[in-house]
Structure formats: structure tokens, C-alpha cells
Image (cartoon, rainbow, N blue to C red; front, side):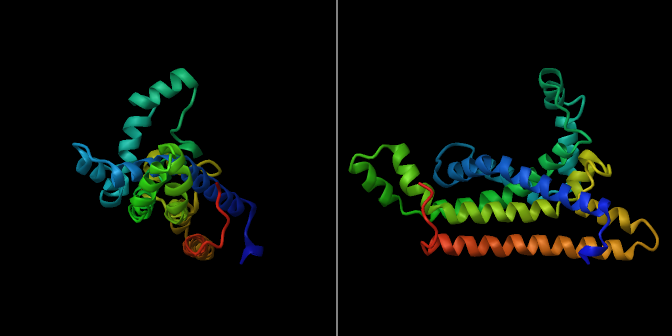
Length: 234
């Protein structure tokens, strides 16, 4: 199967991996912060914040792409500011595809991390602080390592979701070969061409393998961390 891939096919695959990796890397600290706030915070509007975080799961992806187009387009409030001050344009660029993938992956990442944070026994943190550890040290030495399985699981789930992202991406950045044509968009484009069934099959199989590999890796890493088989990062 891989021997029959053309240079254009490899471009699609490498672009999909780049978009997914950038999306997950950029969203990881934001997702963890949101997960921590939702798990530990007590404030007015928490229910609304929770709903907004999970909104991309329930609204049509095209709606998410349309909202990104309004906000980050050339005439959008954020898009205009990025262009005027930094010369950055996300519209019709692979970076825009990464943004769309990150937004769509965010709910899954936050959910996995939140469950892991909520499972941390807060009495351990209180005991550490009683023994003189600062809040920061308690967080770095106890809370973060214990929630690491959820962080890894969230990252892998986000990667798998990013690989499969289609609706928001094509609405926001369109289909530009070599720039925004990721695997799902390539499958859609090939479906419009008579006699391109082999290309559709190859891209579909590769998408399934990448997503399945990410899910399996998520489970393996989470179990290894939970069982203490990986050295602490701190």
C-alpha cells in the first residue's frame, strides 16, 4: 500500500501529521488549564464555561468553522489584529487548519485531563503543604505527576481527533493542495473524482491506522504511568 503512494499522497500525510501535532501541542497547556479550573474551581459561571468547552462536540463542525471564519478571517476582530500587528494570516493556511483541529480536539482533551485531576487525592496535597511545601511545589511534585495519565490520554485523544477533523477545517481554510489538504479533505476530494476509489481506500486505511495507533498508544502510556513503570518527569 505504501509503495503505491505518490509524492502528493505523502504530502497529504505529512501535512496531516504536522497539523495534528501542532494542534495538540498548542492546545495542551490550554486544555490542562481549563481542566484544572473545571475540576478544582468554584466560581459563578462554571457551568457556562463547562458548556462552552464542550460546545464543539455537539454543534455541527461546519458551525465551528464558520465561527472561526468570522473571528479569524481577514476582516474578523482577531484575524485583523493578527494581520496588522504580526503579519499573521490563518485563513487558507495550514496554521488555520491546526487551529480548527485544536478547537475540535479541545473537549476530548479537557475531559480526559479533568477526570484525571479529579481522581487525585487532595489530602496528599494538603499533607505536603502541612509539611512545608509551597502550593507550586505541591502541584509539581504531587498533582501533576498523578494527573499525568490523563494528560497523556488527552494528548493522544486530541491527536486522533485532529487526524479526523474535516468539517471545521474545510469551512475555515478550504481545500488547498499542499497547504490545507489533510487526510479527510483528501478523501473527500478523491470521492469527487471518478475512478479514484484506490486513492480513497489508501487514505481511509491510513487515517484508521493513525487514529487507532494514537488511541492504543494513549491507553498503553496511561497504564504504564499509572503502574509506575515510567520514571517521573520531575
